[in-house]
Image 1 (cartoon, helix red, strand yellow):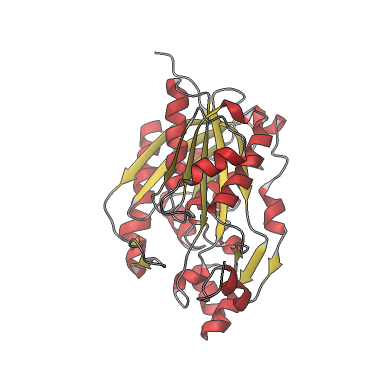
Image 2 (tube, rainbow, N blue to C red):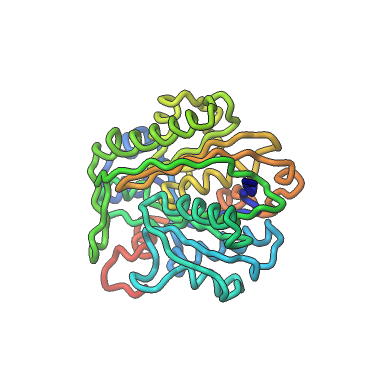
Length: 351
């Protein structure tokens, strides 16, 4: 049986320009900013503009991915948008993206939801469809405008941003050589229908949730492929804050050097479904032929998707013309009142 190589043929990321510093949020609630920064290792985060949502973020990231791939959007046969903040409760974001990028209507499209790992689930689906020959190219997106209740710890981390990957079998920039998922029913974070803000299990979100799933998914894919942590140039882990990915990397035997280029949460916050995908985007912007990347997402509820990705010469020949650093460096700081207005935290204000 001949197995078709599949991988990333183009990618793009997007971050809003607006930022709010940890000190500004702490000031609003009388918290100790230094304690928060040292505890979460988050210094500032992105804030979506009043006219930005998961759909607009997904469109921008997808347009960048199409330019990078250099393909006609009519050749895309599937679009999957992973998010937990879709703008409509009933109406897909994926169809909005398809229309905005001038994709053919002869495609399959759907929204995915699995907390912060819905974007990587989309990558797996597209990978399988390309391998089977059902489609030529698939578009997988992870994007969010994350919610955090005023005064809650999540308010220091929940941010906005997203990444898009075009999966195909020709001119591959980074081949996805294997993937493995680990999933259990672990209710560490949830939001009921009609609830405005999510609820989380506090310290429960650590060991029985985040660490258990990422360590299991990573260990099992390493065992399956007979790889060791030192085989990888880069490692990308889901980043609910700046502390967890550093801790899980150490547990698994990865070094600070291997995760430093993917560790974005300290300066952009937790983009939820865009978290590990954006880390991958930043790594691919720098990676060279032969570099191995370990990617492992995490979604509350709970599960992790692990990937082994090998960078090809095509990534050096066809560098992304719009690297993520452009968005990271282009920023405007806002105060808490402006942040609350943009995030519709002030009730009675039209958005």
